[in-house]
Structure formats: C-alpha cells, structure tokens
View 1 (cartoon, rainbow, N blue to C red):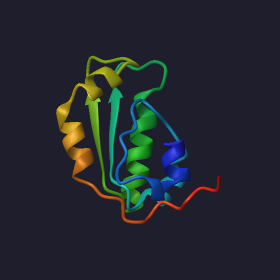
View 2 (tube, rainbow, N blue to C red):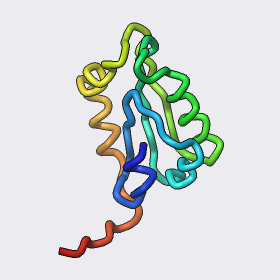
View 3 (cartoon, rainbow, N blue to C red):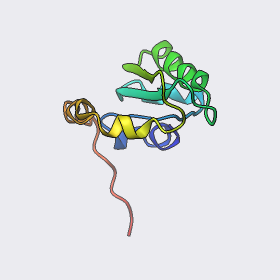
Length: 104
C-alpha cells in the first residue's frame, strides 16, 4: 500500500496481500485498480485492516476487489501467487501516465 500510494504513477494495477496503509492515501489510487488478498485467520495483520483499505478505495471511486481466503492465516501470498488469474488480471491493465525518469 505504501509504495503504491506514494508512487501511483508507477503502477498499472496493484495486488496488496495481507497489508495495511493509510485509508486517506487511497485517494491517490483512484486510477490504479487493486485486487486485495487477505487470510480470514490472519492474526498478524487483522482482516479488518484490508476491509478498511478496500472501503476507503471504494469511497474514493477506486476500482478494487477483495479476495478473502477463509482458512488462511498470515500466509495468504502462497495461494495468491499460485492463482494464474492474478497474472491475467495484471496484464489486462496498462499504466495511464509515464513514469518519470530518475536522476543518475
């Protein structure tokens, strides 16, 4: 969440996994689709954190969806990375703004 909200122009789409960020910062992601993943049994980062971010994105007009793994704890990335649909979804998006060049 932090990287995407700080640099939204760098992303065509994002897929935060068992994370959390500042709900106010989701205003910067209005044009960056997000597919959020979280384990329902996560005791490290409670699922409420994901729903807060998803709700904030929706309130700001963002394109966001949430997948909850009912039996997963904090390791929800294994199932996410094994989901070939995620990669198809990523490739269906394009960045709308060019990435600024970095100074060397």
